[in-house]
Image (cartoon, rainbow, N blue to C red):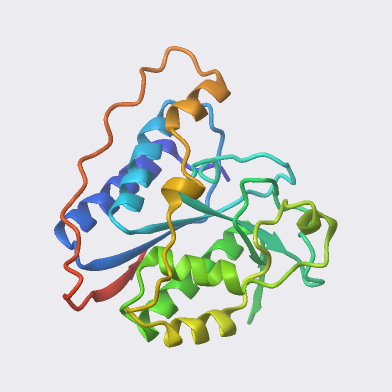
Length: 239
């Protein structure tokens, strides 16, 4: 099911507003949704997701279920963490999107009492939940430090898609990531610079899509006051 563009933008605006009012709260956003990129809202959403990133938040998104090698909304955004789905054999799920834009992979199937479902919508919350769990065990972690730990501890996937670099860093290893999170100290030099490694200007995306009759991206939303390094963070918010 495609996401309603207006509803998505409205929800992201609420997240940005929440972060403005609660600058000490670490925020992890999960977007288990998808849709076409050819929509005017894409530029609003790109700015909002970038603003969440600039405030120290993490936006995790499902890669999509079309078995295609290119990004859709919102896995196209460089500040978003795109997650592919793995099947029960721990290979790329038949339905899962893949590509150079993917960051991580996670199981995409859930089963329970009277419940059975699959999709990248169930893979991305595993990553978002893992980041939140790491914060609970070590509040000193920043969202980007947590993400780097997850990538560094990810396991290889026995699949040609992974070997070709189309499933990101591989399958998440929650146990190892949580262990590393608890071992992390403030004095550690674990830094992760999205700006140098992964960020691309939204205008590049706009030109790539060749979207016409859409005004250029406005100036990014002003950066909000950051957290004092000596302050104790408030509880994690997972959206």
